Amino acid sequence: MKAPRVTLDQWRTLQAVVDHNGFAQAADVLHRSQSSVSYTVARMQEQLGVPLLRIDGRKAVLTEAGEVLLRRSRQLVKQASQLEDLAHYMEQGWEAEVRLVVDAAYPNARLVRALSAFIPQSRGCRVRLREEVLSGVEEVLLEGTADLAITGLNIAGYLGTELCSIEFVAVAHPDHALHRLQRELTFQDLESQMQVVIRDSGRTQPRDVGWLGAEQRWTVGSLPTAASFVSSGLGFAWLPRHLIERELREGLLKPLPLAQGGTRNPSFSLYANKEKPLGPATQILVELIKTFDAAPLDAPFAAPLPAN
Image 1 (cartoon, helix red, strand yellow):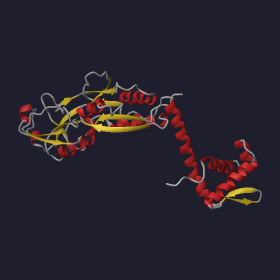
Image 2 (cartoon, rainbow, N blue to C red):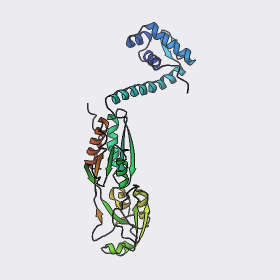
Image 3 (tube, rainbow, N blue to C red):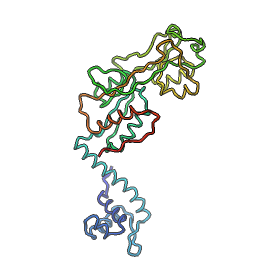
Image 4 (cartoon, rainbow, N blue to C red):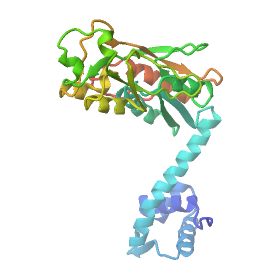
């Protein structure tokens, strides 16, 4: 890739000429001589090989090409300024990236609100979001490839911040054989039916969570896939209520009338990588996650104002 012929300073000079209606006015704003400003713009036109300004009476006016190039240059100059700001923030300890790993059962709506509120406070810090299932979250945190982790499992040796609990409901299609029994169900009733379970994404010590006494079992890779299978009449499963609200409302899924264990409510927690001090951006994201985790999902969304 060849080096640019025109510098950012030259683009800033052209912008000043246009924004302040002339070379003399631009020179005052830039604290330069008028001849220096005129030379800079003339040199730009020579380097680009295309006229940017034309003289209309006593006023310099953009040519058609000049309008296009100036418009594009504004974004270029803005990005360069943001890059310099980011370097300054990093010098002060501000992170370039926060790595967040989340159990797939955690409500996306809460994350979306927290991340939306983080954007205006991020100062260019990116968020790398990764979804895992069960022990997969713990593995990623322990490997050191995540700064923050949200999981429903306890991670030994770590102190987590308690978040909301997630209700898992035992469900099947309304026409499933279990519902046709038309009575309260026991675990013995489930044993002859197919249970759909979600594969633990962990590699070293994968775990099974929930009742697994069914003789037949289908293991799938994601919660949406499990919901799709069960909604189609293929077995039963314990699924997060927030994920299947539409299916419950439309009658594609129906809670199983179990005598016990029809629901379970694991509490989720937020963990931080204890091998790495939390930077200022990570701390802001932690507070936003806690704030929106505690807020009702149906509450009106208003992002908090950035801290001064």
